[in-house]
Length: 370
Image 1 (cartoon, one colour):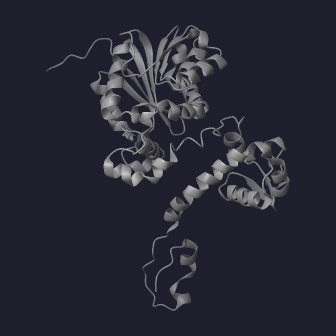
Image 2 (cartoon, helix red, strand yellow):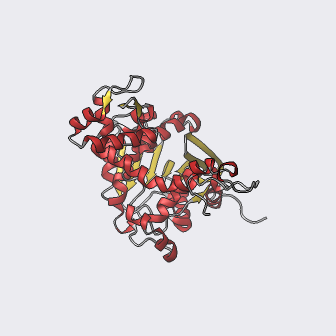
Image 3 (cartoon, helix red, strand yellow):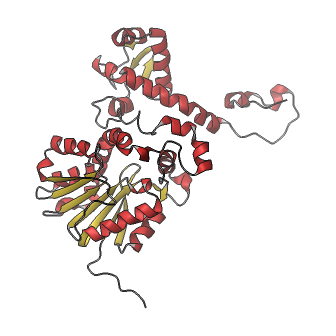
């Protein structure tokens, strides 16, 4: 008689109830498999809710955390102009996922929804959710990517189109990480640093440093079609007048030798593979003045990957969509930094899952030989 794949049935299908002889073997739960299977649907439940404006609508109608739920699916459906029964199924799914509060058929935002899923939330991820996985077709063809060693539709063919919404969606989180890194890096103690931000995206690191150091200036680089995001964010934060924008490929743009006190490589190394990442780190080393610092932020995989699931899956996202992208380990990055001549390596975590290596260019090159 075949065993059931449903974990809730396993609990009831015990020998005493089904009449089988006693055995001390208990099959493992299938819950981890079902969690992955339901993950596909769960993601699209959230994307649909954001597209329909569910979280913003609840916020506008006062259905906030700490307030007893008063909004019904029917009332919310009328305001959104959608089918009430279908919306109720969506709202119940969100409640099951821990993204809404539901009591007696009435709904309200909970703390995670208010903070992360409303467009004006304190750490809004509303624009990030739809673009974070990259092109969804690449995931459905992941087996083909692994067979061939490259994705069928690599975003490298049109990188600006992929990265522009991604950097817009991640800006708030990255700015928070960059701002809180100052508690450990203390860049605000610098008088007038010159900063080079390569592959800056929305330039959260440059913005954080410029706001903390009134005398700082920055050279900000990214691709045509992406650098416009940095131009907008620096203007919004009142620091654009201290920025120079250099569009182009960070492997080939002109960079002054020993012209900078700080170089930032923020979430770009895992897109480049070992060869490209080493080239970027070498460019950073050449650009820094002696005793200048490199800040290399990314998702670093721990010695045992299961210790860092978020980093592993972020690396897989790059592997699924780019030619050279791969998960990168903390040990790999440390090796690359030391090989480039950096010293005083330090790994910090300004906010959860956001890691940054800091490394210093020595005052004098290391002596070679015995």
